Every structure is written in C-alpha cells, then in structure tokens.
Image 1 (cartoon, rainbow, N blue to C red):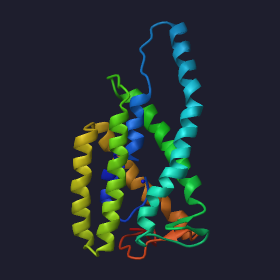
Image 2: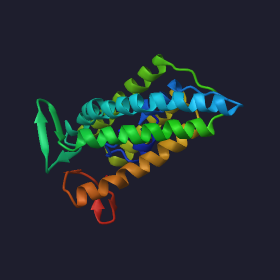
Image 3: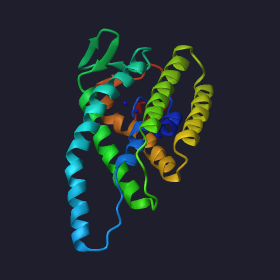
Image 4: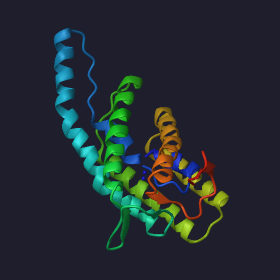
Length: 219
C-alpha cells in the first residue's frame, strides 16, 4: 500500500504502503485569517462543507487509483496475496486492499491537510500541474522499485537508489521540512501497521523480505 512517502518508502524498499499526491492536496485547502467570531464561523462552515466531498474523493482515490498503483508491486511478486486474493486480468490484489487503501488515503490525507493548516504560516495556492507531477512521480517511483526487485538488485543497492530518487522527488516537488518529516513518519508507520494484517489474517507476505519485526518478516 503507497508524495512525499517516496522518502519513507525508500527506507523500506519492499513495502507497498502509500502518500506523494496526498501531500499536494493540501494546496487546494484555503487558508483564511479571521478576526471576528462571525468570520471564524463562516470559515468553519466553509471548511465543513468541503470536508465530506474531500473525504469521499480521497477514499475513492485510494480505493481505485491506490489499488492500481499497488498492482505494480504484486505484478512482479514483490508482494504475494493469500487469503482473499483476487486476480483481475493483470492486476493481482486482495479483496481487502481497496477499502484499506481508501481508508488510508482518507485518514492520512485529511490529517496531512489539518497539520499543514496548523503548522504552515504561508497560504498555499492550488496547483494542478504539481499534483499531476506528484502522481506521475509516485507511479514512476513504485515502478522503479518493482523493476529493481524484478532484476534481482541487491537490497542495499536498491535502498540507495530509491533513497536518492526519493530525495530528488522531494527537492523537485516539495522542499518543505514538514513534508519531509511527515513522509518519514508515514514511511515507518505503514510497514508496522501491516504486521497484524500479515500475522493474524494472512492477507499477504513478502517472498524475499529480510527485515523481521515482532516476529514477522515484513521487508
């Protein structure tokens, strides 16, 4: 499961957890400084009015787009699905992957927007071009990790390459320390969140994983 998580994922090259396009969504949320209670109420109502459509949009992105991106890894057997696995043509996935990715995109996306609203003093303007560039970079990054895995590149070499590419993506599209820190947290938390799903429900496993945490090989 999956900008810039590209950095977080580079630390764990065999993880398929998501977030680049989620970070750029924060540019579409308006920031308004208000002095009066009436103005604050107006802004609060405005934000609530877009909360549900935004949540549904994020969930839908994870459900459909996230599942397709995740398929880049399962295509080369970097991750193999077990209980609940389904094959839709070339797409190998699990019945639980779409809702889990939808929930991930929704919760992490909204959390990112909330934290960015609280931590950044600069107003951000929406940029469709940068959002599209982030999505393309994410897909390219996941595809690169899949091809490196398929080619049998040594784990340490793969990690160096993905780390360098992730940093290049961050420098090109974000450059904020908030984005860097958030990606690091998500990049560590996602593999940990996969442990119970693999250990207790046997939903998937990594055939060539070499990192063991809490008795579960995950990377």
